[in-house]
Length: 216
Image (cartoon, rainbow, N blue to C red; front, top):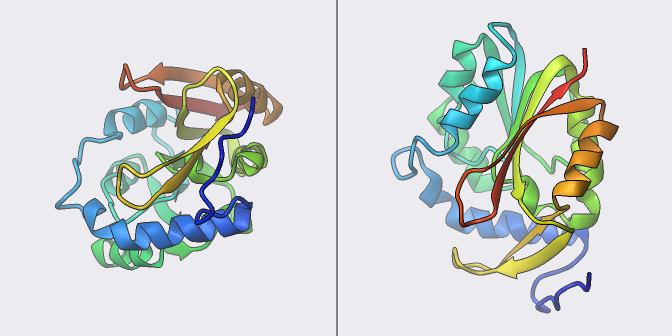
């Protein structure tokens, strides 16, 4: 499909786009503080995904963790050690202050070397800000970092085909992209994972929740 025209103020390359996203979320960070953000958002789906693991230990990574720590205690209940990664320096600062026990990495997940295998990886409402041409390789990277039987939970735009656009509903104009459902299922299989759950959880919005599990 044709790529929508991009505003000149919003760079189109993966690296430059990610810098633009980081700056935008620096400005928006206060909205996601634990006291300001709906604490139930995404929790039920994390419970569902964690149930696939059973009660086991290991490391858990929250990709695009922001400053809200609502998943951390849930991860610890399952014997997991949570850590996070985010592009936004302000988000990282607030997250470290909110939960000093969880290591938070200020880095771009697309180029960050995964330091260890993970039993659980969550990317709630974050991967869709990654440049479209980088999303497939990122998903493969995340699935490749899972231990056998490990689980990846992420959200995406539930579209029929790849697409990208800019949206300013939060204030700053932000980039969004989705591979589309057929391509997402293909990359899950390519990553030696099985799709365990696929759900439109906010209809009529095309907000898609995906749970994939690494083959044992």
